[in-house]
Image (cartoon, rainbow, N blue to C red; front, side):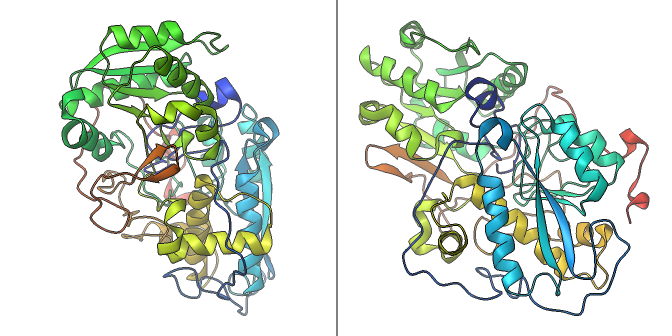
Length: 460
């Protein structure tokens, strides 16, 4: 999820494997874990560089939906009924436990209700939220565009951890903590580094292989255009069936025959691991493979196994500080500490970090409202011009939707684990010199209030 959350995320991973997406942004993803430190302690109301995020107050009764004198009810979108992946509900439990222990938001306790979209039941989940929630916070659904029109009709603001589909990314009344720039290639900095800095010899021989789904076909077209726009050339483009592949050797042989030096993989990481083993078996090693953030975690490392010694896997984390940087990043370490305290045994993952940034954005925006209304919270959020989630991510300007982030973070998979790549970061774990690439083709537009006959004047 970053610009995520982000440009388009790979819904194919959910459609093919039932466990993950590329995301921005990125996502119902497979376990990407780090272990909370022993004996951790946390501040009562501060998070990273953010001061007094939560605390007591003298809240009054309210007629606003989801708000009473003692509580704020928010919804957490999740495909948990399909994926069995609880990372968004886990993040909600940990954040609200910490915030409520500190006094809530000006004295109001946060009540988080999981809205199970179960992959295909997005509309039903959104319609339920429309009946009683104040906002949607810290979650995401792989097929989120299915519910965006209903969300806008009921004027429900959203502060998601990820946004996956073109119709939803950057839609009205949505604030992504990493920023949203629909119509722009979200990986311009990462691919410039791959094609011009790290592996310039690969630029004219880039391959793309993706799962055979309508969503990923659009993504494949976007990546092909962007690679060309950044000075590269796609010389190989293929699909693999949604039902799965019994033998990846023919794909590996095609990649070798085409002389592919840089491989973009848009799909589930279990399939990527099998493809890489096939490449290794035939003795072929591209200069680089974009495994994408869906693969970021120990599960891919375990599946890829010996192939990691030969294949060069990278992923871009949308300018989020990697879990491996926790020792040098107090905000990341604080998430680990809070999980140890409030959800021992649960995994801290990359999507959890994105969810925490979204929760912090919502809480800080609500805290600064003299009267808690949807208009006030939304307006406060989009005033942020350098949001970092207390240090969880590089600064993001949330006041604009036409300004892609210049910052990016690249990690590399090795036989010893994931680690920061040698991409010459300029500030901490970030490099902030990304060029801007705007798509020339029309891949669709995000939904607007006007498309459902509403306007910002209707928001209360």
